[in-house]
Length: 495
Image (cartoon, rainbow, N blue to C red):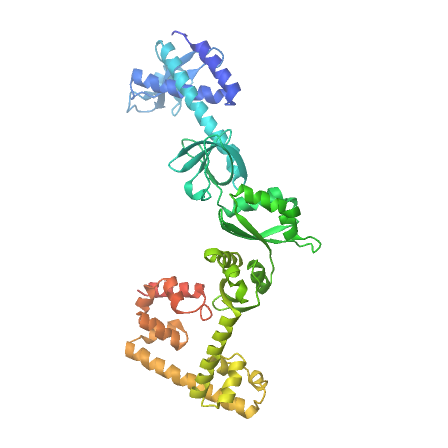
């Protein structure tokens, strides 16, 4: 068999192995496989052809592989034991016999194959190395240059690989031209057949956090922690910071001398304004800090709805709300509480309306004098259920209230609630709500009535609800989301 090109193949293998860092054995193995395919085309696919390349000379030898069996069923791939023993005296069943094929000129085929295999292997190795280089860099900031722009996606040259900065991950208003320097955050790295896909972002909260880590040594050294970020990329951001060491000023450290540190980050983010606020475990103080630069006169919490009313002086209303509601929106996001902003005048007017409304309710339904109803309203009672559920000692602490008055108030409040519940139960009966559903829900009658009015009257109806629908009707204080899921799953299991 001609050895044309065999020495050349080994030279190519050696050179590629050194330059690209691909193991020599791996290259030869791939080439053997490719020559094997060529051999099958020559001798027929019904044969089991194996190729071997001599690693010292580059000589290519083709064999036909035959399995030693007791009874031959396929003459192309099997051989009987007596025939095998003619070839090799120690042959036994289950082993293989390699039958050397007649010499053929594989010089040209081998040269072409070598070229194809090497190109393929180099490509595979490059892709694998790129993935290995970048798979652990998720969450880092990389520097690169703009290579090209395709349908709004910026292809970034990162040196040994390319990154994709999609339109939705770009800061609005920013423009980049080919060869521009660009800094971006690695959102994800995924292995693909055409190479690793490195997804970049300039709008991620992680990008802003990493920029602070680069600009503020105290954050890098974990002396200062970033406890929260709320961003509208390119426009405004709020960053909550905290330091366990009371001797460290976390806000001042992040701002820098004359604002130098935060200014460097703003410049990188296309002029994005950044409010650095002090994180506080006390949610009231944290909300006040988050509403900066507005001054907060008073805040009122609604734990059940996880809402906060921020009352501000008239001249701070526009600052508190911010341009197109941006300031209060970011403050809500970073604190995790819905924030309603109102002026002191608006709050006073609303309080007066609530006071008048609850006073009229108590006078009418509890049949008490106006002064008693006003005293109850002034103490913060907004409905009769609160009065019925309050400890006697709390009511007796109200000026002018004695044991007899408190006892009578509680009795009237309880009687009112019972009468209301009876009406609700009558309403449930009229709507045809099944007792089985009432027992399963174990909720206050008013919420069962609301569910019935929504159309939930049987266990089957409950099974067709979503958790979101249920939560819109029944508040969190009455039942947890986990219990709602349990109820709906129970109802589905009964179908």
